[in-house]
Image (tube, rainbow, N blue to C red; front, side):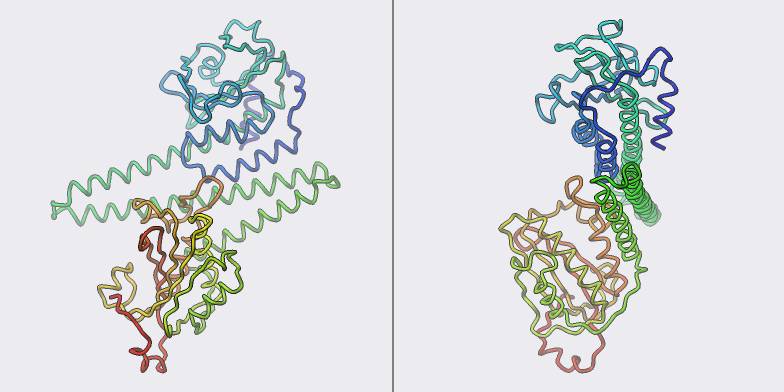
Length: 472
């Protein structure tokens, strides 16, 4: 799709626009492919158009040896400067007095009006050039087109004549196509969120109208279900496509120079992307409760001690363990349970400062029907609670109901895919248990895993001595 968009842009260029020789320092094919591969992987976790524009200016265009970059966003029939790189961005991520250019005015406005990219070899000879405080000599500009409409442009200038050619045009049109595709996803997500907010607002207004309450709740449930399905399928397709892009990009690098010094690195990167794809499938199976489990009678106290002792989570020396005196046995897949615990430990460690400490505790609990309903509809009976408590900043209350949704993450861009907790939820439901997230006792977050206790007559007689506490 990206190559086709780039080819269409090239075919639409005026015949009088001859390719210019590449400037000194132009990125080679290897650098370009690696930068675009990194963009394809990171773009999944970008959550707003503002973050996207600054990421493109700094981490994509900025790494490809362009002297500067200005990105404009369409506001009606005007282009508004929203991100910049180089001397045109002296205020970090802040645009002071952003430039506004009407469609059809100047070179950028001309690109927005005609929807065609342009290369100007000598700006002093172009009647549409609007000189800056520091005049340039050559310019390249490509449009951002989303859902058939121009939503912005990417512009770059250079102090030398004829600094841009076919190679730079192909790079910028590829970046523009990827950026436009992400803008489509962000727009759809915002429309979905707006529909959800509208339903929530309607729900609040009609809570007193009991005659319509059941119909409204059914509509709200259906909307949330469709939203979850849309996020799941869209996120999975996008994530898997990014992995395929990384694999194909590295294979192209390998094809360009199969015996070069970077050949093994390209092969390793492709294999790593394939491995991430396999793990993605396993996580999705766990979330869908379709993973093959081999349950066995397990002592949760022993499982926690073993996990801490092997230090597979890399945080063994910062964990305090407060076990139940004699935890009831549970029937679970030991390996899957250990992976779920490691995921919780890693999340907790990432949420804490360097000197923070983790606490893990186990507890025998008994839930009556009301207590079981509070756990999301789990069956009444005996459970062993495994709690992971961190000393971090905590999770915003509005985000707590969504942290188990697949591809939802509160971590910064590039630091999380949003599958760890959804995999834990899927494993617990498949095991007959449940997960609960709540604020910590003083700060941070507590994640509780409730495992159904195994039916073991030997432990029935010793229930009172086991130190169980009623959580019902």
